Image 1: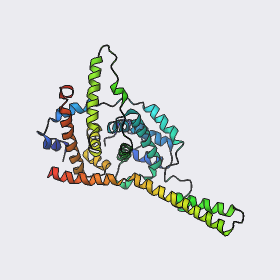
Image 2: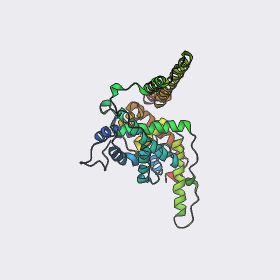
Image 3: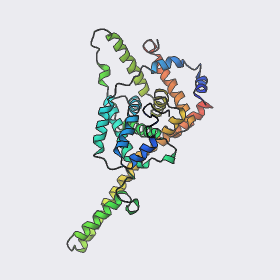
Image 4: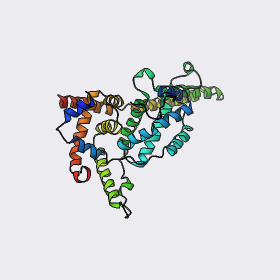
Length: 134
Length: 193
């Protein structure tokens, strides 16, 4: 459907031109792009490198924070002076908890990026569309 | 999407800049942000017209572009601009879910007398009426209207951003326009002279 077909289909339903005149009253305030750009560039310094631009080959990396947590646990384990069996158990379980927590956080972040609500809205839109357009 | 004026013949295409951004090239990021920052701001402001929040959302959009650049796939279907719009749109929806909008103070400022003060007041009043009507729409209808009407994107581009079909976008637009017309008609003396 072309934009003109779309207009024709809606012609007579309401005064399209009047609506567009009204919509045009909503202007965007001036935007200081230079200042905004400077703020973004400053904040880049606090950010990690982009994903995929890692400093060592992907093949040697473990998935996400799990790898980091396990590596840290291994180093600390070997540096600690002759721990007893209880101490080793405690240490391993706390390392495991930390790794699980990081994995959970990553899972939550993934859910946040792809909210189920949006899918439901999308689904409803499709149903309503069918009805409206016959 | 139509090429922007800044994207002249010699300028590197978006895809090339994006590949460099994914590799951590700050100059390429600066060039890409320079190309799209203003239109992203316009879109974000109309989706969420609260000045401070809109600027924060624009910043957050670009920080996400930087940190997620490696996830953009040239062969994945979405153009760079569509991908950027999608990030901005999702951030606006998320932000709206988590924060209740607060009144935008400058719209309530009393005009300072003098010549043109009355006209200025009328313009502000009209702006506020349209802004409020737009904000009262369901999120996806509002976004479809912003992308297709204000940003001038095609229905297909809006469909790619909203991750729906072209028919889905057409339905959203029909409902959005109908609702907007119903709400704005009451103010036709101010808005539709």
